[in-house]
Image (cartoon, rainbow, N blue to C red):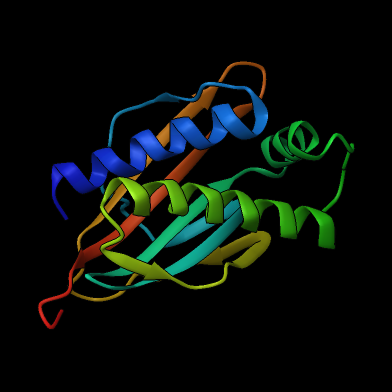
Length: 155
């Protein structure tokens, strides 16, 4: 994973959230996650294949998720439902679509899988660099995009 690829996902995230909910996320400092355990999060996970391989994960607390999804759909939610799961998965789909366009379609991506719970672990692919990109949105909360991607040597 290089800075151009990370930058494409940062720009795609900002563009997606501005377009979907009219809020501009502010990027924090990138970091390497120390643990695979997430507490009280909702995560949309999408696999990447082709010229890049790995996963892209959009994670946020339920409170942030409900606020973001309310802006996205116009409906208020206070618990995880099929609609919430579909909406957070679609937000990650849109984000990855923007990144794919910025990277000249060098990869394909899967349908999203959404995980929720008080505590769960996400194990990233081995031998793939992992970077977490935190964002904050005024009045909505924080979320993180975690990238575990690398160039596919066989492509």
